[in-house]
Amino acid sequence: MSLLELSGVDKKFRGLHALSDVEMSVSEGEIVGVIGPNGAGKTTLFNVICGALKPDSGSVRFSGTDVTGRKPETIARRGMVRTFQLMRPFASMTVAENVSLAAQHHTRGAARLRDHATEVVARVGLEEWAHRPATELPTAGLKRLELARALAARPRVLLLDEVLAGLLPAEREPVLDLLAELREQDGTTLVFIEHIMAAVMRLSDRVLVLDQGAVLATGTPDEVTADPRVIDAYLGEEPTTDADA
Image 1 (tube, rainbow, N blue to C red):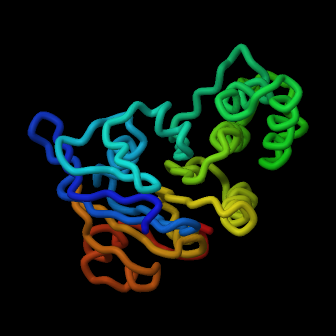
Image 2 (cartoon, rainbow, N blue to C red; image 1 turned 30 degrees about the horizontal axis):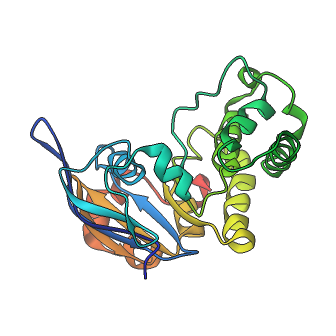
């Protein structure tokens, strides 16, 4: 049985078909990349999965339970957590305090909460920033903090919305290593939206391609990048060289 399954998901905005009959399944421990042109519906897809948007039709099932249209906090407490493209930490809090706040629904007791936050902050490489205001972090640090806040909730499924965007090539490698570690060591299931094809090729077991709100193709990275429809709709926009790694 799939851990995450979408069936016939449709979503319109004032007549614009943002998602059209989307079918998607993700097995436990799998890493699935989601790619497609700008405006293809990728972030709308995540918003529907996590409960920020209710689909006009279709269903979202997580761990065998229909979670269609449930509140994001309810879905997150069940173990499906997402990151956002725009990082908005609480400016009045330190890095560690931001992470502690994200962990409160899953970790009880002040000492355990503090220890868990310290562990997560270290895991994403922000130990030196732990007690500094989150607003002092550079872009790469903010990306790591966004990831830390998601990890603090102990996710079974982690939805990553362009977690590498804005990072320099040298800054991407540790993040990619951490994502691979989450699956290998923790068994975390990952679904990630990404434009950097070298990262998609490196991490993904399978890739789902969206175009104009519909699933254009799905398959292994090699299968998808060799598909003429995908090349025409998306890959022709941007080279997939190691320069983007």
